[in-house]
Length: 104
Figure 1 (tube, rainbow, N blue to C red):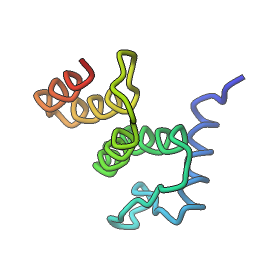
Figure 2 (spheres, rainbow, N blue to C red):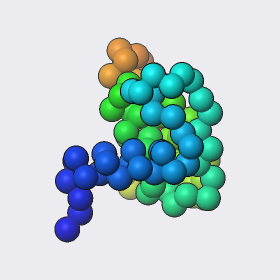
Figure 3 (cartoon, rainbow, N blue to C red):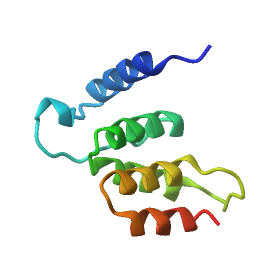
Figure 4 (tube, rainbow, N blue to C red):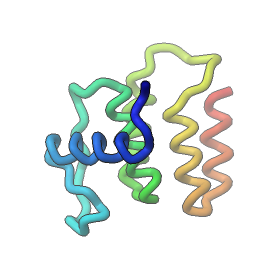
């Protein structure tokens, strides 16, 4: 089956370590996030991890995923949902709503 929450978090932290991306929770300061060459699902997992930390770093990752989309989707767009959840978590409800409207 698919990994549980703890396993997923551990896998994401390993990916972050291997990519040389400091974990913001470790207090390593700000950084850019080079995720080129990684599968979209891996980038999405890292973006979700940063979103759950309320780290603005997730915005660049979600935007990167959105820029990779070749066509407009009528279905669920996980990077838009994640971006909206981040904005909602930091109290920017207007930006969250605007982001969700991009999916329509």
